[in-house]
Length: 480
Image 1 (cartoon, rainbow, N blue to C red):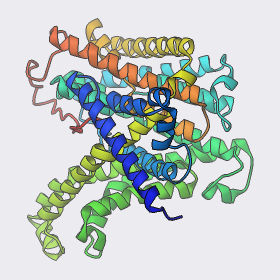
Image 2 (cartoon, helix red, strand yellow; image 1 turned 180 degrees about the vertical axis):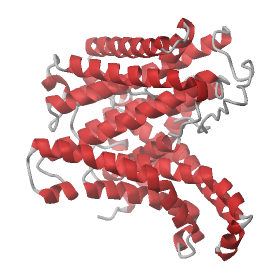
Image 3 (cartoon, helix red, strand yellow; image 1 turned 90 degrees about the horizontal axis):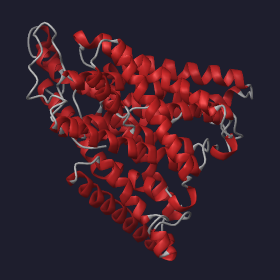
């Protein structure tokens, strides 16, 4: 299908308006020291049925039609923005040598993940599935989504909050980020399983699962549990090495001409591979982020090592000098981050805001108890785990508030579950608002704790002892 000149102009205008509103409102929130992602969603909310649709329904439907060529193209941008957001999340999932904090990290990770997830599963059993589930949703898949919504934590949002507060590099930040990494990886695996099982129960399966040709639910559970786990283990172990080897290959014309194009192609190739296996492409984007970031982080040191001793001969045989290759890899990684955060991710968040119709799909009573339940369970679980590990009451509460921020991953959960028709628009609205409100709470509370001196900053905290050899994870500088 080709676009007419009128359709092309319509798409371009819609993208400009979406990007402008997302960045404009996001900038206002940033100046107010609030998470920028919330402003980007609010920017889309202004263009959707909640605001513009109430003022002028005709203008809203013309600018962002629900179907037709413009809607199809915007849907493609929405999907690309989602994949790049998950890729960015994966690129930050690198833990540090936690040293003396390992006991706290282990205790908080177990209590902060298992207890909220179990509580979510239990509460979901007493809910009416018909009020929250979509056409392909079942009581089991709805319960898993509900449990994930209670347990999930946002690495990007809390990283940005701590960066703004000069808390990165402290003992507090090392614990929070290490625990969040563990939780996010586990929950993305569960999400892949949920999406796979939901797909197996539809009449339109795809990929390798469709070739098996069975309607057996137990077999589907086994398949969609084993495949994501094996895919994660293999790509985590060999993905960075494969990416680094392909980057150094003299016959990789794509990387020689444009390292950025090669990096994008690698991400899309893993996403397509996931579709071929019958699992959701966001899982491929996650492991692609982990692989490309791991290769970029080790590229410089590997290049330095190859310049001496036996490595020098290998460098001489390479088509590109190792130092230049490492620099090009780092530059392309940062360029893709900038392009993603500058355009695709804000447009994605804006479209998420457009999808929110608060007047029609916000059940205020349900959202209020859902918000209170999610916050209380997460706060108590993390606080208990930190207290068991020997943390003080104040430190345990700060950890609990930080881990309660759901941010981007919570919105990804809502988007993918709605796209897979596991949940309906009412539950989608509640999930997005939960992610926004909890991120807001974390930013406000931690900011006040720093200003009151209850949470030490990097400048105020003495450096760790040399024996501990702490290395805080690299953190994305822009806001997701």
